[in-house]
Length: 399
Image (tube, rainbow, N blue to C red; front, side, top):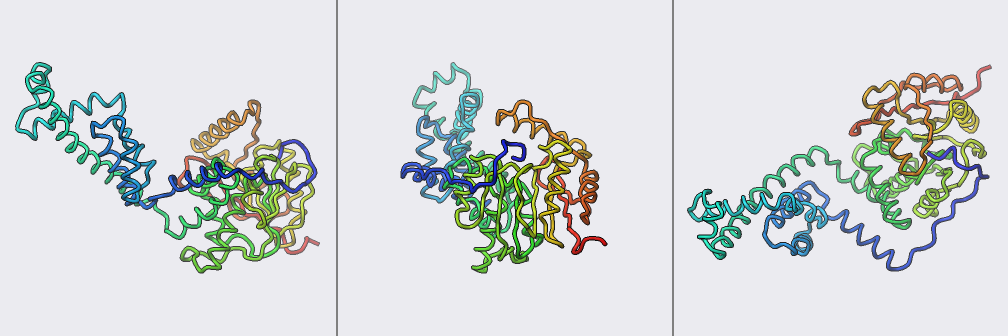
């Protein structure tokens, strides 16, 4: 993520300046609005309520009604208002017509009454009553249907409550760096399987130094910190092993602004340095992580960084590499497209990438003397072709 940035000697990342009271209040408001009513049932009710309100011919009041209903019923107010946008300038003519028709049917009329001449005969009061009754009926039906669809969709994707709590606990400290950083970290933890996978299967060693190279915002480190707190309270997800309680947490990141966000969130819990991975000295470590880093480097630089990672690892230490699998077919094409879009968004118009197949990544690690386990596909829930490789340094050098 950051290995090819400007060269710099390792230096502790400085947290960003403290934000003023209005900034903190805004961040807390966004946090409440984004996280309230998070269960599948409450999200379904938010959608149903928002759709019902959106169908009401009370234009200009939909936002206020959604906020009031969400507050009163404990629903997600943002989701309710988004659902209310079912009624928008493109759909409003069709929705109003269907509501007037439904109202006429409820009052014993017929759909033929939608003709302009028949509407004129009924007068403004009659049409208004048709619209009022029809909006209640259409809103109830559409709300029930879309709310049920939401519940059925989310029910199968719902993680255990303890996992959801862990994700929120890991992401929340990033509010200190800004809402954008919090949203990025929360989204990665919710949708990128690599972070939870490493903790769920107890892959990280209990002690020594855990060195995250190209750590970005320090997402894995933040998850480890949150898991430690959950373990101390006896609230780890069922079946999860203890996290690395005694490991020293250390991240190196080349982008000062991103490293500052990590430092703001992880202050006192981890060491975050700003440095170019291709040149910075690497401290001794029991575990080294290179998650989505190597493909930013030229082939020779990839090999050089892996050799340096092998040197800094203690005997028996482990290296985790997560990279795209160039043999992943259509999923790999999606990976390349996503990387290119991200590079363009960062203004890196000429960014070059160097991908390899999962087998070639494994051979590259083996050439550095590692004992490499078979690549683990790690794309569940995503359209991408990612693999995780676990490479262990021999306990003793071969004689």
